[in-house]
Length: 56
Image 1 (cartoon, rainbow, N blue to C red):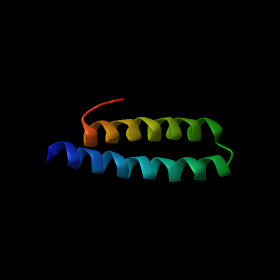
Image 2: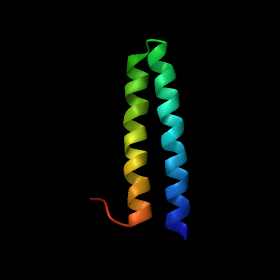
Image 3: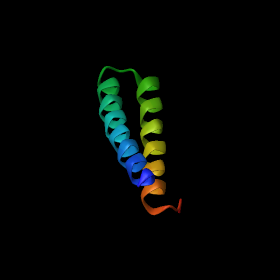
Image 4: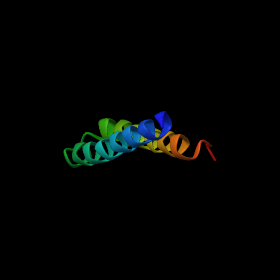
């Protein structure tokens, strides 16, 4: 149960980081957008790990 709640939370953060990164990219803040997209990728990996209890 705890892992699925953590998975939903990290998936929600992944969506927020993708949207914020796209907005930063449109404002030509490339460093911030790259950082946010990297954070979105790590949140995606963490949510997959929380749901399936395996990394790869």
